[in-house]
Length: 135
Image 1: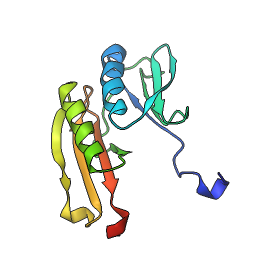
Image 2: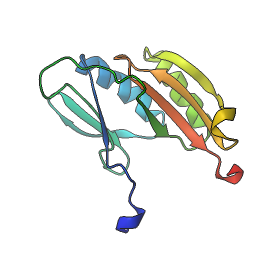
Image 3: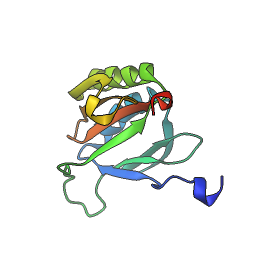
Image 4: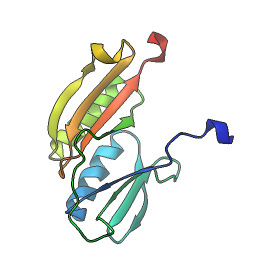
């Protein structure tokens, strides 16, 4: 992969106040999208594909409580509508709060299909699939 083909973002980290519950949640949810745990350290775990750590869940390094950013959300790449549904179902079953069931969103364009949930710490996360044939 050339430097110009690399993604804009290397990885994303979110904080948690209950590492064990958070990693149990993300073990289920990330597996629904074909991601696996790629690294784990005391208080930190990473998920990704092909061994690359793309998404981290961790206790804050400064020892303070983790907080949620208002207006912030993280979207995970799904590989089809079925995978968006699997993500939503896995997240709800693992204790997430629904924030938008799987489906198209007219405001985002014809190619968009996705869903939103809040994880156990209140972070807004999304699974999205872009139908490139509609772009």
